[in-house]
Amino acid sequence: MSYDAKQRRLYLAGDQFVDVFEQKDPDHYALLAKIPGSFRAKTGILVPELNRYYLAVPHHETKDAEVRVYEVQP
Image (cartoon, rainbow, N blue to C red; front, side, top):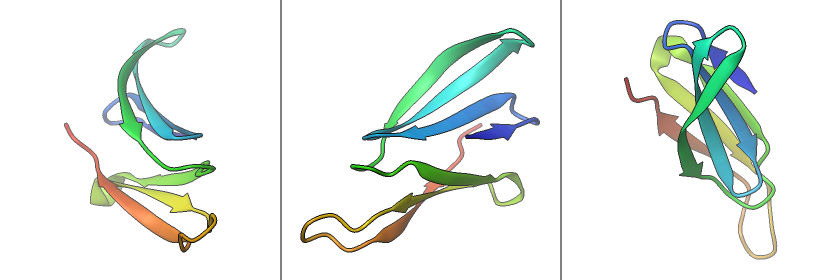
């Protein structure tokens, strides 16, 4: 899970998707986007200085492990 304080967004990697939540106030969040991820890809990190979110995708069957890079949208 990663939090972008500047954009007030929370990024959560889970099976098949990266969920992006917008912080409405300290106790309330709203789902902003559900971005396709990959099977068993649950490790991600936000680098706000680069406006990038990196998702580690593990090896699965015939597919090699990889790091996917997503551009953070304003």
